[in-house]
Amino acid sequence: MALLTREKRQEYFKFLGLGEYDNESIHKFQKKAFPGRKDLWDSQYGTQTDIALRHFRNVKKYAPSFKPEEFKCTCGHCNGYPTWMRRNELVLIQSIRDHWNRPVTVTCGLRCKWYNSRIAGSIPDSKHCFGLAIDFYQRGVTDTLANRKKALKWIKKQPNFTYGYGNGINSYGYGVNAPYMGNAMHVDTKAAVTKAQPKTLQEKAVKWAKDIAKDDSWHYVRFSEGPKAHECPICHDHPKGKYHGWNCIGFCYAAWRHGSGLKNHCSNHVVDNATAERILKASSAEALAVARKHIGLTDIKVIRNAGKTIPQKKLKAGDICMYYKGNTYIHTFLYIGDGKMVDCTSAGSDANNIKTRTALAPKVAIRYVGK
Image (cartoon, rainbow, N blue to C red; front, side):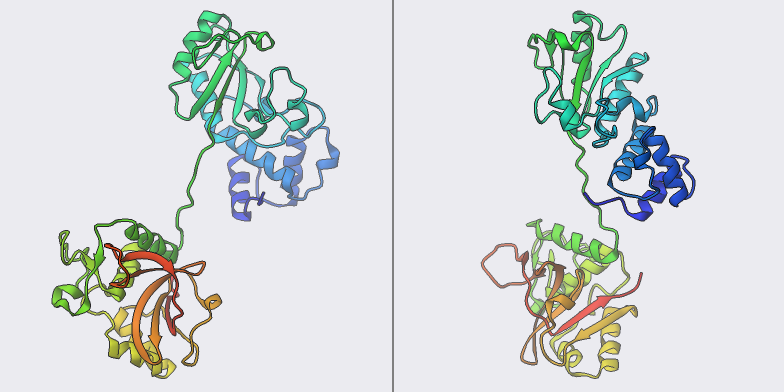
């Protein structure tokens, strides 16, 4: 498991009121999280401190009616936090607390593997071991079979809920013989699925290009088909049909403009063959000047390799790449990393020719280097 970044640690320490992130504050947090465990008070940020910090932050953020220690593993063998309570589970238990407006007693939250194997009725992959399950008691809500049935009817409708049971009932409507639960109930949820959002302008351009490649309404428009073939269909609102697409380099310009929000040229300024060949052969200063003029941005860099192809390790996701045969310009594509490109071309038999493919070996790459 990768540790939280330094920026995230600073953010969490501030959110929890722990002061500035430094060795002294780490030591204070360790004493709070691991009372009586002086062996863990080393003032160093490691895996166990990272897990506890995630747990404390999640409880305060998603279940403010509870304290972090209410969910800790009570086996006495581990440090109490073999993992941390996940967001969806905390949101559910807080919803239960709020819906009936009554205190909730957590009878079991986190479990280490050792403790889980010694509990009656537990299964080896119990969600308690992953921070996705809670056993709880709530007076007037879970203390009779009739009440548990009513409670489960409401709980099972909550977002991300997956399963719940108590002695005599489960969320599938079956009777369950679970005397070890007493008057408590078990509820668990699915893990939150979060997709990393693009942060840099280059990542945004790549995401935009990938999304367009998945949409079969966009297609390749041959450069020589007339003035409209040079126009970006988004900027000029071309309806679906003949001009609802781009030529190869127009597509890359559109990825920068509409994906990243850059103010580069997007229509009628695309690099023609003669200009592309000039960029390959010109001096560094002239090549940069020509590229800046045609793209409409000053914060760019032209990457070449003395007339040879550019090694893939020197490319970065978001680069606009030019492919040549000899010194003759052939094609332009957007490099998206991991040896892949998204390009717009008439090559191949696909009806929609904006696709993610194995990257060609370019001789020129234009990179945005601004912020």
